[in-house]
Image (cartoon, rainbow, N blue to C red):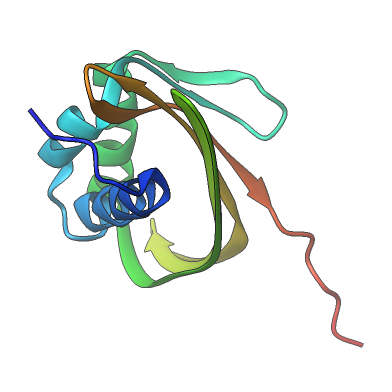
Length: 136
C-alpha cells in the first residue's frame, strides 16, 4: 500500500508523471494501480468514453497500439486539494502518426483524484483542446 506523502500536491504531481510515463513508455499495466476501479474518461463535451478501470486502461493501450508517438510534453500543472479530493490539470503538446497521417494537438489534460485507504487514485479525466491559432 502506498503511504500518503506529507504534501498531497507533490503526490498528485508524481501520479501525473506516472500516468504519462505509463502510456508514453508502453507500460500501461502501471495504470491499473493509478486508476480507481470506477475511473471514467469523458470527452470535452462530457460524453462518457470509458467507464471502469479496465475500459480506461484499454483506451490508453488502444492508442499506443495504433499510434506512433513523435512528441509529448507537459507544462503548467495546477493542482488543488480538498481533503479527499484533488483536481489536477496540465498543458500538453503532442504529435503522433496514425494510419499514415500526422497529427498534432495541444490542450489541457484534467484529472480528478480521490484519496481512499491512504492512497490517491484517478477517478475522472477529460482533455480540453486548446483553440487553434490561425497563422496569418
